[in-house]
Amino acid sequence: MRSHMPPAAQRGALMIEVLVTIVICVIGLWGLTKVQSRLQMSEVESYQRSQALMLMEDMSTRVELNRINAASYVTGSNSPLGTGTTCSTSTSPLAARDLGDWCDMLQGAAETSSSSARVGSMVGARGCIENIGTNQYMITVAWQGMSPLTAPPSSVACGANSYNTTGTACVNDLCRRTITTVVRIGNLDS
Image (tube, rainbow, N blue to C red):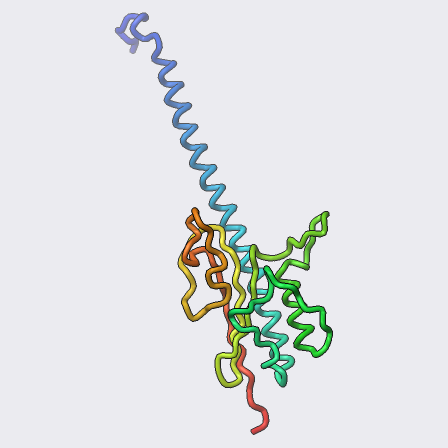
């Protein structure tokens, strides 16, 4: 069936259809860039968490292997190792060497850029070892998250208030990420 409208009345209809199609495509592409941005942020968060897990597991193994001197590993939550600290270069006793190695790893010594800058760890990584009771030690790794979430519980004090940035959504420890584990040293004397 042919249209009964005169040809002059149909002029410009194709142009409107093209403009509507362009607007729909632009909105779709804008949405795709937002999704891509969120995926990239999630990837960075995931990488940082996996790095933190490896570092936490490394230190818990070191404490377990040197169980007789486990108390020598305690740093407390107010004296974290990593970002903003000078790492020990002592090689004796074993606990001092282990803490120095852990501090270096928290600062990203595993990977360096061409300018020898340390880039192999999380953003603002800090580590704490606390004595939480008879032969029990809590090992915590804290780092800077990419976006605000929920603040860690108050019982996890490592790195508290170190990741707040005025003028951003990163306030009240909403960008502080932490993972913890408890190492229990058995009493083998009994």
